[in-house]
Image (cartoon, rainbow, N blue to C red; front, side, top):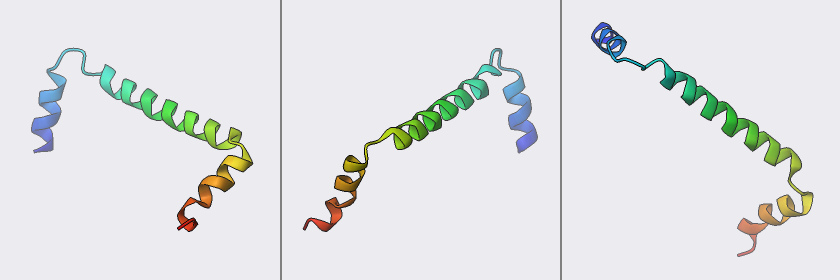
Length: 55
């Protein structure tokens, strides 16, 4: 089954760009997430962490 899929994918012209694009999207998302986490204000983090307890 995997051999069929692999050989079918090799026949598609320009398919090699899709793994590169998906890696770039994945890397960009997590870099942006880490940047947001490290630059978030402590007051905002504390207020959001108390939301479930405000009932």
